[in-house]
Image (tube, rainbow, N blue to C red; front, side, top):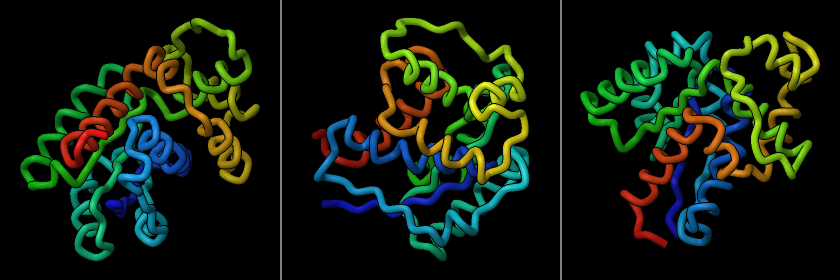
Length: 202
């Protein structure tokens, strides 16, 4: 079995928790169980803290490079939020930097529109009503509103929010989330492409 040592550099703990929980589910979902194991050493991800999304945007190449050099990472997942209109531009600019730095196969970028809570809200809605076939788009709602809906407060502490993020990230319905969030579908496709490009199809 091939082991991929990966790290996460993201703008907040919610992003890190979601990705940490989603990655093994994606590996299984795409049929790579028993063929590839994704290992998340705690040292890099604990060290790689960000002050904001802008900090991630400005420093992600340095963190990926240091993760490879000093932490023996095979892959780094980089996450930051963006407004709907900024998603494509921000991803395009970051992708160009990856290519220019010869890191295109060592970094994967995920950019939730508005905030990771928008992905979490779609999951929460489905968890609470498994028969739900459709839900209104919510990207026009403010981040504070979404946090209130998910955490029951607009400014939750990590102690309050982290367990809720971990819980909502379990047993992800990928078809549902892909259908409701274009920004998640973008990351989903990138991760699938990484697997299929680097490893034999299952």
